[in-house]
Length: 433
Ligand code: NAD
Image (cartoon, rainbow, N blue to C red):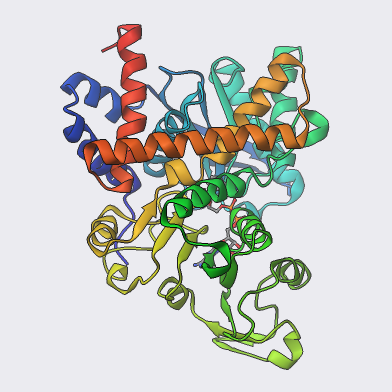
């Protein structure tokens, strides 16, 4: 597989969109350059009493449309290049769904699985204390959220640390919080629900019915499992799913997994294949799930399905496997799962790639709703949250398709053009370009 280069990939897509709309050099330069890059060494005490230091980042890309918004990830491969790319994509994502927020992202280079709960708490608090004391995080300035390996509990520790430094409550400084601390109903499945609303709108145009639509999901984690459940409930045929241990595919006679059963199975056994598979062979009798076949994660990507939902890692569809993809639609719930090289191949093959900055924007949209509720002291009912999310996602899909038709560009480029145009309009109104 080709080496990952997330910020370069962002620049390739940005420059293509900029050429299409004839963006000025000053506007392009502004979008190529994050407004602020903050770096630190996060120092915290280990259970042994020793101190440990790990690299921490917060990148603030663009605030022309509102406060910086974007998650914090804890991952041993998180680095400045990745955080810059994700912060930049956040600016575009917020603009594509037309919410009044800018783009930011944070990260700590650490393997959180190596830390005890106490160590995780001390590290999370140290990071947020740094960001608060430096004046980075603030309800009207920069509002983080969870991302890879960061949870509502971690958001709670970070909020508490922020408020200790300030000396007063400020729940809107961070989203994705537990409900008891001002989290929003509907946030846990908002990304998947938002992606599903967009997919439904796309399918309406093709006239394809749910019962005739097969779906494979790569990454049966938070985003992927909720998506599979929502699609299954709506009558779609979810025929394959994978996690880091491998893929399972249902027998053609079954027609669809019972996704609730699959989720319960994964919860009980820790992975889709439980402890009953070795390599690509499973003990089906012991699994007692349904008739299943196993396959590798790579093979799942190449299944002949209507919808391939990518909800695991970035860069999984690349130059070397793009020719083998047979799905008709790719829904990017993960960030950056299709590389620019593979995008060009998908476009030539007529495969619709519904891009991450639209497909997974339901998460940040409900995070924005959480921020609004915290600032107004209100608590919205779940139906109200999901109803508002539906309106945002459907309107964004319409805007996105209008741009695609206006400029006759790829799906990815249409989303970039829509986001760039909205940010540039805001920068012009401010007189910053
Ligand atoms: P998660 O950790 O809950 O789930 C990831 C899943 O992918 C896990 O089940 C893991 O086992 C699986 N996986 C890992 N390697 C795999 C492989 N090689 N093949 C198949 N599966 C593999 O994470 P998540 O929150 O669901 O996020 C997934 C992606 O979606 C990330 O790119 C994230 O940035 C993006 N995303 C998530 C949200 C959200 O609200 N959760 C919002 C926007 C974007």
